[in-house]
Length: 335
Image (cartoon, rainbow, N blue to C red; front, side, top):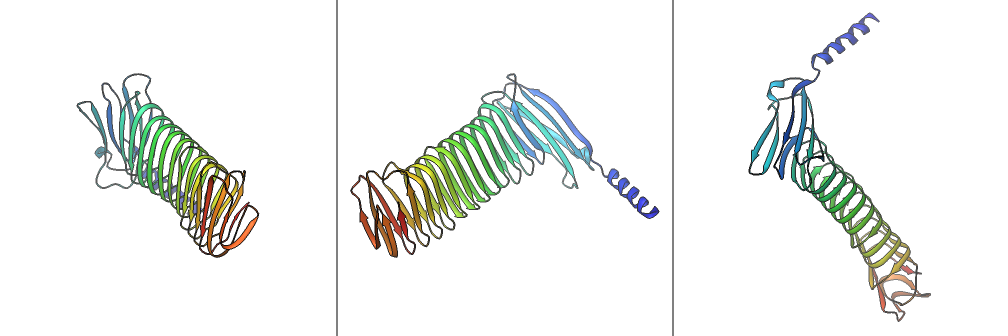
């Protein structure tokens, strides 16, 4: 027991011996800058609305060693404010936090190595974030945002404007967006809800779930299932290795699948559409059957539409909305 107590005391002393302490801290106010360029490095960065026409800065860095080598650098030149986090070449552990308040209408460029970037309650802004591995969070934003990250999650809530994002690895969650969204994720799930506008999702490895969308819709998945629910507009869905499921959708369709099935429930057509499958089956339960015509082809599978059934080739209906279905080895059914 005595040895255990001594060991615990030794551990406590070791921990306190390398405890992080404040290396530098700064609080400043700037005026007259429409462009802000900040390299937040490892620091967590929060950008919020300023209650005045000034830009406010509040930052702190803690480290266990080499504290004198840390600092915040401020450079002012021709309407542009540059902020840099300075750190030593050699370090073991550190922590930092920056809070930035900006007025309406500013342009902000953020470079981050590993810190999280949060922007919230901003209007009329243009934001560009380039992050090596940090997460990006956008809340209640009106403006345009571009985000690029090899690794990091993207979370968006209450966004109005233009959003463009690319990440190689990380989850994407978007709720309540009005405007245009062009989002790519090479590895990770994409979950999107309540979009009014143009939506482009380029997915890689990971499932895609999209719900409540009104506008131009383009979904692409390399290796993962795609589900689109309660959507209205021109719909394009492509999947190389995964199922595509449509539920309560209304519009024109161009749907393609290589190895997965294409399934639709309560599907309504407003214009001529096409469904293409290589190995998977195509099965559409339609909300309406008026003004439709079907042109279906398959190498050697059964084709069904409007109560008719035939192998390889089926043409039925005289409506102005033509549904074209093409499958290599899978069957097709429209009912």
